[in-house]
Image 1: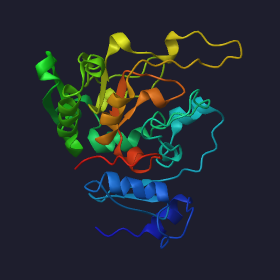
Image 2: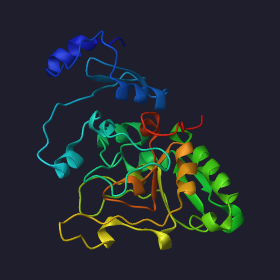
Image 3: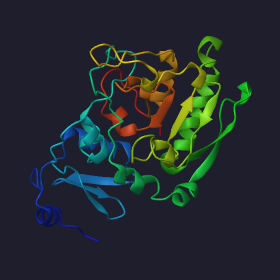
Image 4: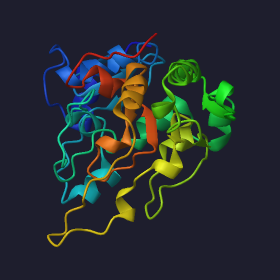
Length: 266
């Protein structure tokens, strides 16, 4: 069904640029990352390949970071550029956390709106089989299962000094809310995996400094992080509210990232 972008945009009253204008750079990363799902971004609208249309930028003015986390639009989740590779700032700027700002309807549309819908997409990935790892439930949407399997193969070939940090995993698919919030965890969509829990660091486990800031801590080897990023996964260790065991499939942030080029594999 043909969709008149200008008419839809006028109806919602949120046209931020002309219907004929090219998408902003960060919006183009959506098309690059999800070519089977996102066919166009223009006139402040995201056009899904099945005909559904979503608003790109609500132009909402957020009162604080928590408000942003709870009410982000699609544009918001692309504003902060994910730093690819080893060159990221420590300490991280306050509330700098590309990937943690998410538009939930986007992921509900992409991967499934209920636990049952996501469950229907699940595939089995044997994590680090030569190291005694367990089988994980991972979505087959966007070939996430195949990409995580490739991550596992590459990590298993690494020296033991790095490999030991990722041999154990606490799993992938669990339909749940993030503790203390009403937001769905990315584990709900079976696109996230937690590894090396015994070696992990999490912002809530650290006592704030005298000025209220969160001291950064990490033990995850960066050569491990680079393998995940190569295949389209971002790392929670590059968030101000850090979670170093956490990796999630976010190829749009890799496509729009900064640093060494590490595009996800097909």
